[in-house]
Amino acid sequence: MAIVSASILAANLAYLSEEVKRVEEMIDEIHLDVMDGHFVPNLTFGFPMIEALRTFTNLPIDAHLMVTNPTELIKGFVERGATRITVHQEVCYHLHRTVEYMKSLGVEAFVAINPATPLFTLDEILPYVDGILVMTVNPGFSGQKFIPTMLDKIKRLNDIRKGRELNFKIAVDGGVGNENAVELVKAGVDILVMGYGVFRNPRLPELRQEILNASDQ
Ligand code: DX5
Ligand code: ZN
Image 1: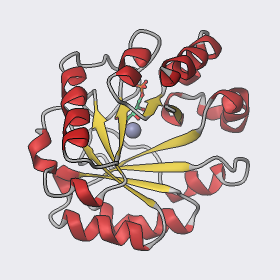
Image 2 (image 1 turned 60 degrees about the vertical axis):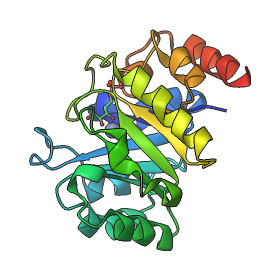
Image 3 (image 1 turned 180 degrees about the vertical axis):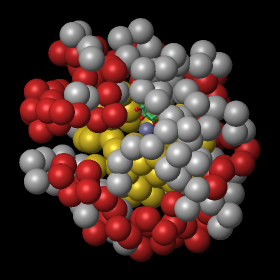
Image 4 (image 1 turned 90 degrees about the horizontal axis):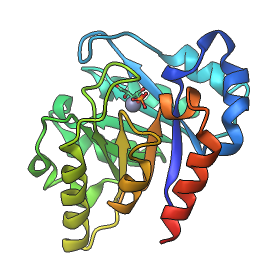
């Protein structure tokens, strides 16, 4: 069953609680994009935002840490109610240690890779993670276009998962919506992160149904 993770970066932040309530029945979790202006060319949310979210929603929250020092921030997000932490392979010198640390804190441990980062860089960590987040845009902004060659990357990751008999989840983030969500589910994706696809999509109810149908097949 594929699930929808709503990236609030694409919401109207002036009305965040109303925005989340508006889509709450059609999403499964909240995706919080934490950006530091160094690892990615944008600045977004920190601890005050997850604290605010926790005042009005009990949905699971994934903190996607697009920062150069993710390890230092993990505990703070867990203490404030994150249920999953996603760190980038590109900035973790000791990725195994970081993954084990996340798991020791009782949250799901995901590792993200940028579009240009090859799958083989994950070879040694796959048995330890709860999931891999495949970035399908260069991280930094909502509303970018899905990079088409990423579909094949996802299929190859799914093949690796089957071949090695592992059961990590596959998440996809960037440019996901009406045009490609079903295809991605069929390619093996378990978690669809969507910004525009959730908050700026008049077809969200239909898309939600299509995702559910595709998951059954
Ligand atoms: C991109 C972020 C994404 C982004 C997704 O750097 O990690 O989570 O908000 O937004 P859409 O779905 O609009 O591409
Ligand atoms: Zn994200």
